[in-house]
Length: 397
Image 1 (cartoon, rainbow, N blue to C red):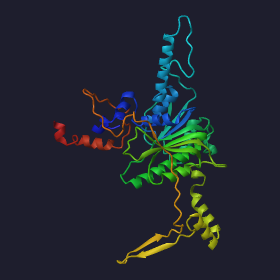
Image 2 (image 1 turned 120 degrees about the vertical axis):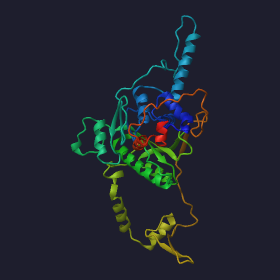
Image 3 (image 1 turned 30 degrees about the horizontal axis):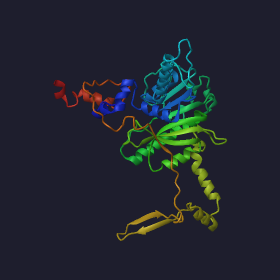
Image 4 (image 1 turned 180 degrees about the vertical axis):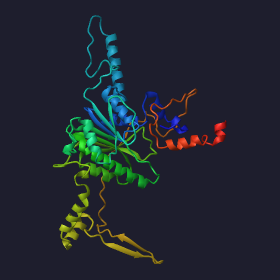
């Protein structure tokens, strides 16, 4: 969380510091859980790209310490209030009967036992209660044995197995690259990060597990949706209320992991085929006879020809453009899957894009956990050595 004037007027930025969260992104996970009930029956979690640790902090406070937030906390307060009213107005000498669905002791924490949470990031993460942190690269195959060892101390790395003996219930990934402002490039780099997170999740998820990851919305979200449907029963694209509408970020929420038959996950062979995919595609295309009937069937089904035809168009200036001819029938409309898009939260929540007026006498709080290894640390050291932001003149003042 930064200290700019806009951040100071951001409601979620201030709420995060007031409630003790490391970053405002904690509200994104809480709102996703409120919509999809992500933490139900969850005891084993892997948090990828976890720094600075706000999502891991949510996992620690909800799964380990037993705290409740959002709608669940409101329901508990309402239940406690109604039960107190029943005790106040009950007849003398009669015992209070608890209504169905009401729970007493809403303020009492109910820690869960046997909870295992592992957080991974290239950047160092300050310690959190009950969280095992690993400093590793999720795109490197060597990370899988480290993760499996953290999940199961009895794991034998000599077996070279990349399947978890005790799979996890939930895999989270809030990672994103350093954006350049070129949206097409940013979306591509983010898709590669998502690809790495998915491959690692396939190694440790149990059947019926859940996978949540950040994406950058683009024109091919429906393709991503179709690909994830191969492994999960339900796939949604969600936009938490705390995520700024001006940002292209969203979250892909995958529920009920159902791996294909005989599927074996491995980072050395991503998605079960790895780098053999191009060879498999080439062998399949060359094994099919290129007859007139094949081309006709492709045209009737709206598919591309096995061998694309190139059209060369030369303009008056002698410039030649090469285009791929589309031989699909013009009368057939393209069929595109529309990924379900869900906006988490309601209009009563704070607007993440709005700048709220600071109240009189407002005192800005310091961040709960300052960055441990910020990439701009070297720039700060050089500026300090130069005498401040404006040179030695500022230092003398």
